[in-house]
Image (tube, rainbow, N blue to C red; front, side):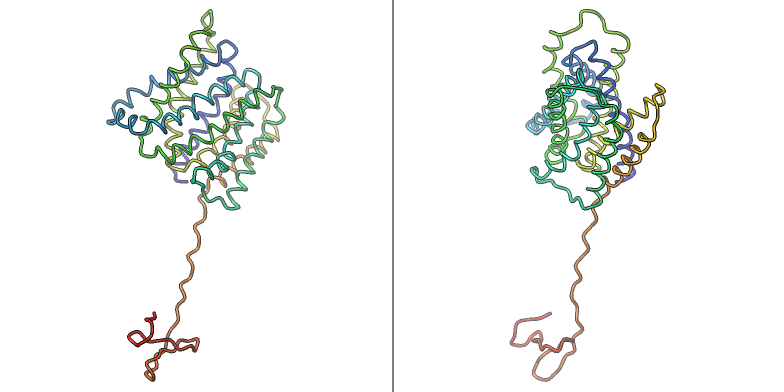
Length: 325
């Protein structure tokens, strides 16, 4: 990837490494519908002034409303609710481990979108190492959950893997703000009735309010702009490899801010995740050009023939035979 691609990749690793913790804090006091509504409404409100400053917002919505609707449903409206609801019963580390399957799902789904990227041994090895690193990192911290919650995270994985393919194939010509702002506004409208019906009886705690604010500002408004730019810069498959880095960021934050133990297993996982990310995001090697056969030919004036180095006679251009090189 380019330097810009790596900068976006690093930013995404941080801003999408903390939502699992924020969601876990928020769902202790407010409903999943309220979490999604606040996140989407706040993100849309922050991005709308910037989107309106770019000409053509209404035109792009009219022209691309079908793929934009598909992107909104598959990336936001469905997955954000299922992930949030699942974290009422699953630990954030469990959710992070399952979400790490997004690149693998993306590779498989890209075949159905006709956008399959050339993988090769190096990138396949990187995907495997990254998933192995996430497993080493999170398996010791897994806690229980039920089958429905696991299925909800699986729905999130499929959505997260599919939406970038839609954006890459059908929405490349739509400016980032013109895409994500209407999608967030639509999601907020969808969840507004449920959020109103399940609103808490009292004002949530400061921790919950801070978690909701971080989800809306950092993990939504900032993150989506960076993520869509990353898709344009690096492609949908390589962009999804950030799901390998996110759990590592979460553990690092815990060690630095909450004095959580930094064990040898965690360090090994970091090494696997870093190596896997570098390999998986590497550009596919360009095929070697096939050598063009060339032969020095010696001409013979006898019989209007040309004799190549192989000794086989060939017709000279301009003779009665077919023209040769």
